[in-house]
Length: 341
Ligand SMILES: Nc1ncnc2c1ncn2[C@@H]1O[C@H](COP(=O)(O)OP(=O)(O)OP(=O)(O)O)[C@@H](O)[C@H]1O
Ligand SMILES: [Mg+2]
Image (cartoon, rainbow, N blue to C red; front, top):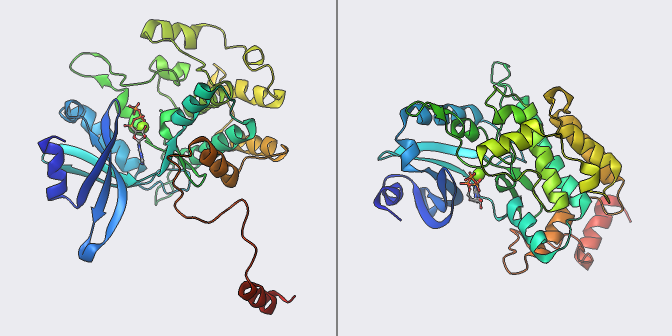
């Protein structure tokens, strides 16, 4: 831990516990927010890399987006608590998620060669759609729509809690990631291109439809356990996403129910106007899910994570959700008084 980062411990009300990971733009720590008389709360701190914090225009855009997204409060969104500067270090405190990233779940399934159950994949993505629908239509206190766009829906930004909840992280941050670098007169794209829509890759002004495309790409990856777009170099990625014909999903996912393949192809349509909105996509996935023998649900996702990650699985509560224990004599007598026998 360098000195600048340590200063957050001394000046602010946070105690760093462990470095979780370092992404393209920031380092994420598990931390404790401390209050009076021993109050503590577990949070995640995202500390922006110095080289970005040192660029005022970039920083301003980042701060503007953080302010725009500060009031997004939704069960499927990782909540932002605070944004602060300490000694030139910029960091964001947010809800700490105990669980795994969707990236880790996909990689795990690929490593063991076992497909992800399709209803669980549909459940996860339908929750991402709920988060997007809320943000895309979010209005400020005066009732004005803010036109929030995530811009970076990708498996690393979908977090799964051990108890089977799905949370989309990093709202709005990607706008700063893809801004034009004033010094170098070129676009700085920090990080992944493989989930960007054609419109985003070519640098057009994008709207909510870009998030739908990325969500479709994520759903494909969950079902196929391989990336839909893989080119690394910018030119090749442009060709792959913008110029080449849309991938033939029926050929790539021959065993998948065609209603899901149909939905997927609409979500990743090159023509942004063809894409369904987040509410429609989420609802269609839910309807499909409900018709399955084992529909996706938080309980089923929890059980799935418990099975796939037995050594790291740490549910926040020990309630056995799938097989509740039989009621005790006392519970039975209380219930019979309340509900009758
Ligand atoms: N709120 C959170 N609670 C717990 N862990 C988190 C939280 N946010 C991020 N993480 C962890 O930190 C890692 C790094 O996150 P970060 O957003 O910096 O990078 P990323 O999304 O993986 O990729 P990128 O570099 O493109 O942003 C994530 O993969 C996840 O494991
Ligand atoms: Mg992230």
